Image (tube, rainbow, N blue to C red):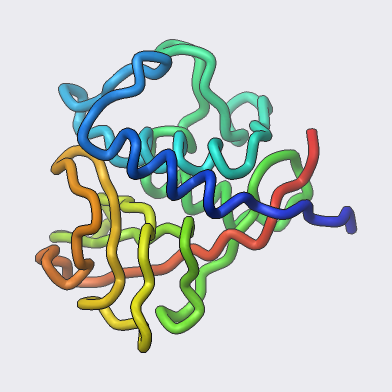
Length: 167
């Protein structure tokens, strides 16, 4: 198994703060196409990881609005990419309980229905970690330093970034 390189959590969080209430012109805004939350999450993740996986269909990359992996902009695909078992380039993660969440990790929320549909990035973790002390940044409903407890979610899952595999 290849060694995981460190994930720069501070860079991911700094990016989140910089662009939480704006749009980086280097990336297309998907607001009018169902939401921009996972696109923003991927941008934050890339700021801390610096490595994309250019594997067609199952990778995680963005070249343009027409040349990107489903995992870059889709909540379930983002989850599947991060929790993959195969060793491929890019960030890797695992689903963890709230108590193991760190800065630069991600929360996926099931707001209604049966599927997860929102993906904020963790920008502050209070002690003890609880939904009211966990602060996130997100697009779609733009937010920075928003308590997780203010979302009307039915279920949350937490994605901890374990490291980055080089390309």
